[in-house]
Image 1: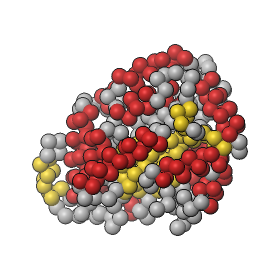
Image 2: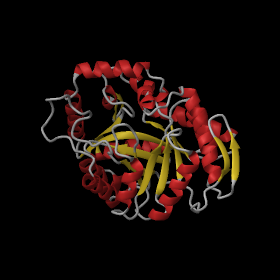
Image 3: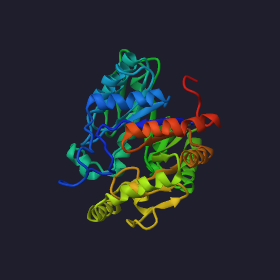
Image 4: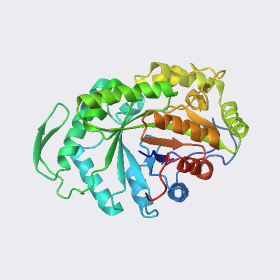
Length: 365
């Protein structure tokens, strides 16, 4: 099967640094606010190059993904919106109703990225005090209720986290949105195997990705289900390898050592399995950030979430993506800084090579 590529919609803004610089530092004007005009430019670039969709994130520092995706759907024609959805922050029946409406309005361009949440402080700021395992229990119930609501038939549900009487979505859309379940823990793998369509984990060297895919596939086999598999990376692709690594070096040079240490303390103590795996790739040291050929862990020095990037010439990045595809990945979600220019760099440099080799399908196919 061809690999489906997705880009990232920077709802928290972006710029030429990995992290927002401290007050009084950084290049003036380097940060871009996530206003509708800028996000439209990114979305149109993504559509221009034929990406399957865009991950549309959720978080304290993001604009609301449903509102922004709805607005951008009127300015685009084909690209899908993979909206990040946190179970517990909205009723699963209401989420199904919202999703059905979005499908009708956009002509079926919705996908969902189910995120149980990894940062305890952020969860509590939203009023969610459940533990890691409890959140996965709730997420399992959430998808169970969501999928039953999508049938359009009235139902009752009696779970630990949800009690529904006469639940109903009166106008379900014929196309249920593809559900991507994110995480690196066994709970995430089991959730994807039982209720999801695609299991997706943050990018690691091939051996780590292969391990995660194999575990998730085993759980899916136990459920007698076939699901897809994906990963998430940043990317720095240039005409030559030297140019790409120079950009990566500049990103590290712009990181405050005190900020690196602060971030690493936080990452090491997190309950997120994926975040701990990201931190373990480099241990907070800038000395050996290329953890596999063309796989760079520099983003993870200061940024939460995915900490790895594919770095190299267009040919090298294409080769590495082909290697990951050979491990069984069906989907790859990419991001970069800044997202607009890097979408062009990747779209003009790497995508033609992937299509030439049959790794990614031609647009419209």
